Amino acid sequence: MKHLTTNILVAAALWFVMFSPWTAPHLNFWGAMSCSAVILILLSFRWGGTRLHKEQITFTSTAIGVLSAALLWGIFWLGNYLATRWFGFAQEQVGNIYAMKDGNNPVLIATLLLILIGPAEEIFWRGFIQTRIQQNESLIPKRWPRFFGELVPVAITTLIYALVHIWSFNFMLVMAAMVCGGFWGLLYKFNKGNLWSLIVSHALWDAAVFIIFPIK
Image (cartoon, rainbow, N blue to C red; front, side):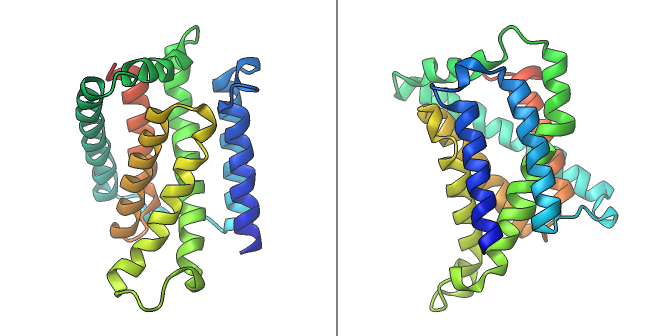
């Protein structure tokens, strides 16, 4: 539990530096995000015991990753369509998210998202944090039905994942993180903890939504 809490705080500090209005303007976001991704991977391997087993890398798990990325992109397209019509601030906030790629090489950003940033987030948030919360029985109410009790780690991880984005003061970004966190958390839970599917899903979705098929 000690290592779990410490590493969540480290991730929260990294996200503060990357997104807060006091620090973000002084950084290259993609450089900072890449450094943070490396730190997350190292923390996961050192303290989380996270491992990607080769038997997880199959045609089926890869296909699940690809299809789930496409499904999530569709969810975001619909969500953006509705949000920009219901909320006056939504379009500007979504625009601010996409502004993070301005002035940067889109090929470089897509490459970083595919091979480093997307995989690192899943290795840390689901492979380490959600797994360790799931192993901590004291966090799961004993009187709850088993099905709902098993969803508690998903809910806790999703909430933490959303909250570390709060320093952006961007409601749309926080909600996007919550949707993504819940989606990948449930996929991890019901796909028998297959980390490869999540890595494929997150990496492809990142590259698609930011560079290849932006929803804005």
